[in-house]
Amino acid sequence: MPNRRTLSRRGFLKALAVAGAAGLAPRLARAAAGGKKRPPNVILLFTDDQGAVDVNCYGSKDLHTPNMDDLARRGTRFTQFYVAAPVCSPSRAALLTGRYPQRAGVPGNVGPTNGLPNEQVTIAEMLKRAGYRTAIFGKWHLGHGEDTSPLAQGFDEFFGHKNGCIDNYSHFFYWSGPNRHDLWRNDREVWEPGAFFPDLVVREARRFLKANKDRPFFLYVPFNAPHYPLQGTEKYRTMYAKLDAPRRMYAEFVSTVDEKIGEVLAAVDELGLRENTLVIYLSDNGHSEEIRSFGGGGSAGPYRGHKFQLWEGGIRLPCIASMPGVIPAGEVRGQMATSCDWLPTIAAICGADLPKRRLDGRNILPVLKSADAPSPHEVFHWQSGGMWAVREGKWKLVAEGPAGRGKDGKPARSGLFLSDMDADVTEQNNLAGKHPEVVERLRKLHEQWVKDVQEQ
Image 1: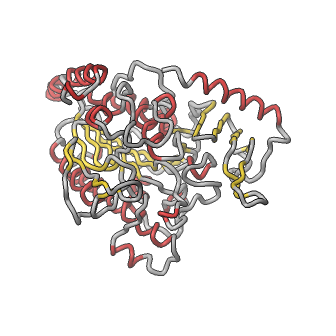
Image 2: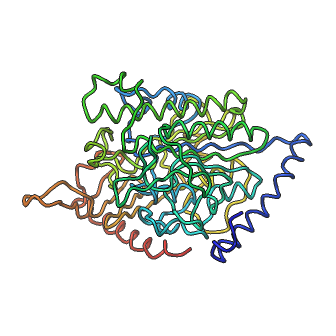
């Protein structure tokens, strides 16, 4: 448990509550001894800056992603799955708390002095209170201080980096401000120069799985790939040697992370845990077109936009879930679902008590089980900087989205851009002029949401 002198009073009380709740573990062990089925394990695999269609089962023809595809064969994949933000930190906050990033206190990317507020309740805390062992191996990007570290947010173990990205061999964050080494075990800085970071993540995941094979666990593996720097392994540099840049460098890292996902899941199979394990895979936001990614490389397929944008390419992403006997194998779901939904869905599958606070996510287990179940979302909202968007049924309104450059060469904005997502997912044809009543209704929904989301 974190040192009392280094935590806020609120954080200390929270840590006490979580530590006390961990006393449920002996009860779970006794229940298992009495013949009751052990609660399911949960593995959450999170890639970084992976494009909307950059998996073979989502339409890619030039990538090699056998492990993601195998997960889809073993489970169910979504074709209309949204993350709650088009950039790293707020997307992660929404996933872990089941709340809009604004309600979770992380409206934008986290810097050196802020993070996920300690009073927020994460999936890790929820499951820890249910007797689970919890761990995160990979990229945190939700706070650097002890009060905002993974250990203060319900995780028993952490190995990885706290900042947005690192060089995969030196483990330094070097493209903003002074060079900073960023590799940690729990809250202690560690050094493993020359070791490939995705390999270290797999090493830690395999160790954790073996150590906790006889008890329920929550393993969160937020890989830092294919986020820049694009450092795929030699195997994939050879495989994609004839592919044009920048697709080539991006493809190398996508296949590298696919291989690492396969290594984690192979360990699950080796330990005989797959039958009682919920596995979830998704990406945090769309592909990057930053100069650090050579200006692109990822693909959004038919969708407009990419990372940082509220067009579909920034927020509509691959998501696959697998659990034998609970989630159908080899099926596809077209209902709208969101990353906020995983916390309440995990609670339903694991029999855990939901946090006693307002959630924006909904239990999508009925959707996973049936293609005929309705989406639990009539409306969903996004806000990123000066951009905002609303999705209501088939309608999506984007406000102030980037729209290329004007005649003066300066960046242009879309104003209010309305799309019928049932008829056209490309967001190239603005229907705002034809349906002003829809625009006005969605604009008012956004204004109401801005006020509402401030309520905790």
